[in-house]
Image 1 (cartoon, rainbow, N blue to C red):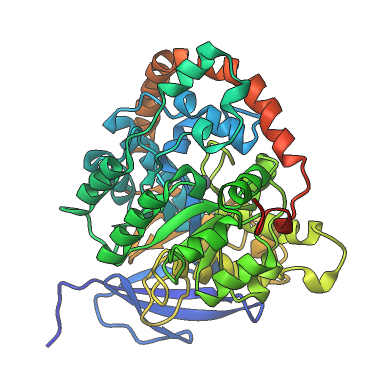
Image 2: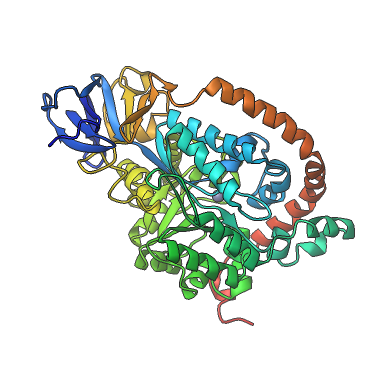
Length: 502
Ligand SMILES: [Zn+2]
């Protein structure tokens, strides 16, 4: 018996990217419901009544998967320039504070709109809500994605130490008045945060194929071991991912060694947190032992080269990660520290940063490795391995249609090289997610973008007023944090200086 309620779509005449082979050949794709049922040569049989999409003159590639972003960052794009990671964290109460539930929803929705317009169909999102995540706040982020029709893994960030508690010596350079101000930023005790996070998981109402949860202890040394264990237990109980910023800045790497007498990665491994469900964000300062641990445990790294450059954190070594069998994904990071959510740019930078590390061509990552990372690699990090990241039978129908008449593709010499080094989102024409066209002829079909712009502008005005005192505090703290933290980063980084010491 047939089930007439399942929608059928046949996509005819597009060139299907084979990233590994650097080829694109004409195909027809049959989509049943939200899944690719068949991929065949031109003229593939389709059931009568199937919707036909004419993809002649288009390149089809799997939806890009953003391995690391932050929903709250979308209202803060362009707010800063000369920011290290530590200055960005100092700016947090100003650029991310004062948010209502509606702001959280708008910010997530805005990011989802930007991502789908730029060929991205799924993201690993780490929203911030202070002093701790609430069910309403996390659901607001999830609804933002769901309403646009994009997929997301939403991992609320938690910590029980502020920047000023996490970095030894930092409070000592503050005046007594400033110390009092930063004391007021203190976070909830770990048990309270863990309980609140647990409540987020109970009664999650969104379709888990579209928006699912994970757990994000922000930065290891911003979390007590008790909180890290609680996060790991929660992830295990619900069978979801763990995602944390590891070895992002050199300051983090140095402080991690001081805290633990070993690298943060070694510490997390000793606590039992590493595994196939574990994702490192950034990993700029991972050493070979760290990468081996991650590779041996089947863990992932989201490589976010745009953010790393923007915050002065350095150039992550994707080749070494791959050599150590780490699953590598690619991400943009939040718009508060990369200012856009453009996965084509992230791919281009992943390629260029590898080449920028030195002249040894054999150490460079190839464009096909970058495409695989930004699709299959990120998908695996999100827990969607085997269902997202390829255009093949059994995979979800998350398909980007690029216009080959756009200057980015004139002439078409090598589709893989051009996807990474030439495409910038300008040729994105349609974007299908789960069989549904969420972008059609370059316009978002699911939400009213003009109305969204008006709502965001109203939020921006209100937040500018509400966060004015936090901005003043940032401006008083910034010169002190900005002098102290780079001092830590100027000390040579040698694990042996600390391991077994003291
Ligand atoms: Zn991040």
